[in-house]
Length: 582
Image (cartoon, rainbow, N blue to C red; front, top):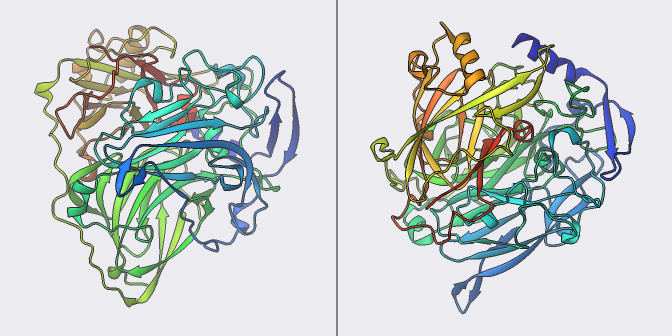
């Protein structure tokens, strides 16, 4: 592990090369630049934006009806900080002039269908370097492949954003599993928070870095209104957080040279930027009243974990995790969010002992055994608290929404899911697999629609991997450390056979048990798989809020996937297909 960390430290210190690549023909020009020193940027000078809102419904004489949205992907420029030059980005929006990073927040309503035609207006060449050796989507006639996944959404396979269902500008070329120009979101799942982002094969990490991400909120007024949580755009706000580094010209920096350049000329195992961005601004500020606010915090980073805390000791009151409410609120001083996780929190600024408070971060990177944070990536944003008290009719109820408990006795079977990292002779990571298999190997996970399964996730690597399962929701049942005695023998057996039973998993999964954090005991679609642990989860392939079946056929092509949500891992290629059967 020490050599791996040393390599990553050297990578951040090296002179950077910003590359513009031509997608077709493999030609590119290189412009050597030193990394912009983000410490020279003044913190907390930009106001926190509220991203544009798009209604995922029509209102006709007070009756809510389905609607169709046209959302494009555009090459434009975005101002991340007052003192940075405008940055070339790829951005979602209803037009090029309205495109933003993050994209507009889609507001949907339970039971009212939303149709979105995602249109690719991107140029022929990418603004970031990419690696042709990790099997990315590669059109024959040029263009940048994209496809949109609604993360946390429960909908038919054709609308799930399969990595091979990509398309280029004007749908001139499409991937082998592309089926439709318009995504259909039924909005019949439990209310909660989601986000949409690019999901193209081998290009997810660069397309998100370029700016292709945005929020999605599903509301169910009959269920949520009695809770009396903060509402309205002023007091209920998404906070989409990610990290970036910049060149001196304001461009987004991404490494142009890989850690194993003879094998992968550009791929590196994780991307970390030193500037922390919230809603498209570097270290923004927000003036708040002395009352309660609701923040839907999304970690949209490629690889960075955040351990959020307030500099003056304020509490987070967690009301939801990922796309579902908790059964009751949980107060905590800190929240650890892996890439793609969501924390739905309430903060009571009437209890602030100071006029200013910084939302800070102290998660090592890579997590959990990497570098400590520095002055720049240890700060997220600042809140300026008004002096005068505010009349507040909102509350935090003692109970939220009860969903079924995780009863493993209802599981129809148990599966073993193993995580592997492979290294070169020089101990440099080369690729990562789930179950020792590449993505295009025959499907091995075939759960039956309407059932629950126990998955025993065995993390044989030294990194924490956020596991994301499309379609299914799960609860974490238990986290058990693998015994260190004989662990090398077990890893060798698993590497050779990939058979947890044959390798006697029960002999080794007898170490320390780590309790699941209180605010993570609800239904989730992402969870942090600790290194050297077996994490038992109960996965449900049906709705959690009703006993009804899916209003679509989940067995259709192109199916679903599950993967690590560190995007650099997912792209190379820690992802496997998930085929639902009847």
